Amino acid sequence: MTEEESPKRVGILMGSESDMDRMRGAWEALEAFEVGYEVSIRSAHRSPETTATYAAEAEARGLRVLIAGAGAAAHLAGALAAYTCLPVIGVPLSSPSLGGLDALLATVQMPRGVPVAVVAIDNSYNAGLLAVQILALTDEKLRKRFAAYKERMAADIASQNEALRVRKEK
Image 1 (tube, one colour):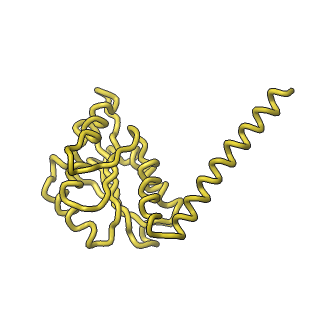
Image 2 (cartoon, helix red, strand yellow):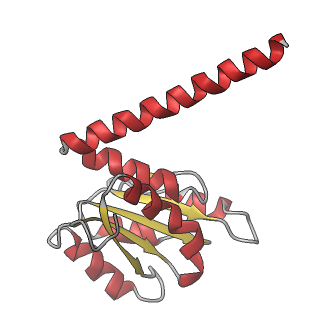
């Protein structure tokens, strides 16, 4: 399901167009669960006013979760969290200089009172899954789809384990 086919409940933001490939996993996860989303480029440093406005108006526009990917100083998730009561999920993005450790630390070290959930470096897919889990708290159909997803993962592991056992016996 594309963002045009479902009400937009998740906002996916990134610091620049160069982040698009690493943030693609977020909307792939949301599409797998038929959750509507929108994608936007915002910057905590280069366009702070429009970033603040986006965050402040997100809930009124129907969004329920924000996902923010940024590298280096990685203040996008924190900037959004400062202006909204919605849950914000930060995706630290890798950079050539420090491999994403800088972004990870900048995203995870939020001051008391301004929480940001953080996933692994470059793991926007997990950010999308976390958004699905948050939305599933109040959406029973979505919760059931997520539970089925978890069951499929467990069945895949069981199948792999059985195949390994069979190979070892030969």
